[in-house]
Amino acid sequence: MEIFGIAMGFFSVALAAVGIIFAINLSKRTDRLIEREDARAKEMIEKGNERVERIIQEGNERVERIIQEGNERLERIIQEGEERLEKLIQEGRRETKELIRYISSLIAAEGEKTRKLIAQYTETTEH
Image (cartoon, rainbow, N blue to C red; front, side, top):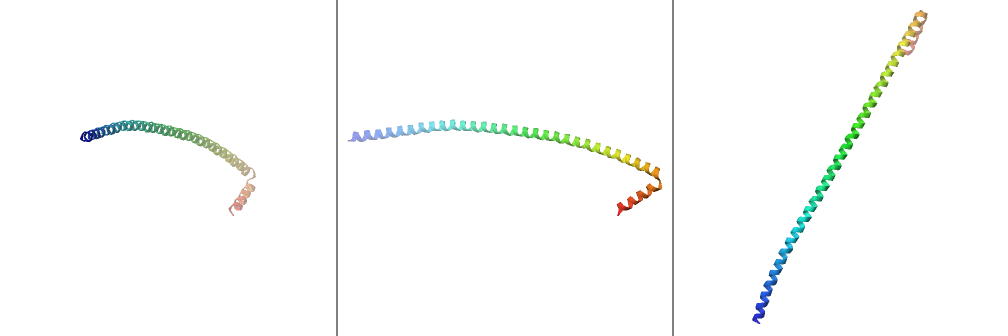
């Protein structure tokens, strides 16, 4: 029985050693697996960050292009508005000059009668 006890003790020690070796081996394999998964996760994150960065850059370029196009359109509209305003001012000046000439010719032709009409008109518009 002593031999059986010694054999059982030896097998227990051997079994414990195998268990420890198995645990160490399993731990190393798990560490390697975790390292690979970490590397893969980091790579995926990096690729995702690069894609996000590219999308942001493309969006910024699009916004910049839209703003530039809007500014160009606005400048064109302002230019056209200024040209139309200048034409209207010139036309108004021309019409005013023609009106002044016409009134002057009436004053010269009718004299006192025209002055009275102008005075009457001035009095009615002032009140």
